Image: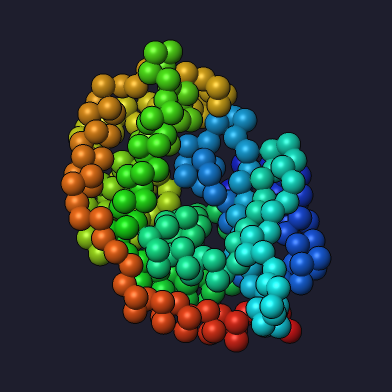
Length: 267
């Protein structure tokens, strides 16, 4: 399973592939999914955007049966435009049942470096069945509010941060329009499927076009229609019940983990 945009730099993709292969050998793990995250996968990259490769890995069975377990993350050094790191599938399962949406986003990435469709489908099905949607909404609300609190309103907002404020609002609206479902990762898809007001849609299209031509340090004022849109979507979720983790999902996560060990752990 592989899906790489034609405009990706070939040498950079080759470097990512080499780094992923080295990880599987050096750390003795299986890597059933490696994707692009960040602005390139979200659909609003800048000319100088990094390549943010994220992956999920499975260790050998004996590596989980030790008094001194290894870390549940694998990180590689930042190298120019490359940011490559990943999570143990056990960590992904634990965070999904707690309402953390990061691993779910990775499963929805339109850009795939390598992957096993059976793994992605199995973990996606688990997320659809057991991710607590109220906590997922709360995750995106906090994510957006943190970015908004960091914005420098006096001098304008970095275009990159403006999108980090706007994307969670679009996710929240999408989830309201698609109850019971987890959202897509691709920002233009979110907008197309959540029916924002025409003036908001037009402003977003203009921002995406501008960001495609502007370095990450570019500043812009917060458009009034975007501010109104964001405030409204955040306000709806802010008064919702916070939700809670269903303890039954722990047993389901254990079962999913054991199945993934059986199917994907290296021998």
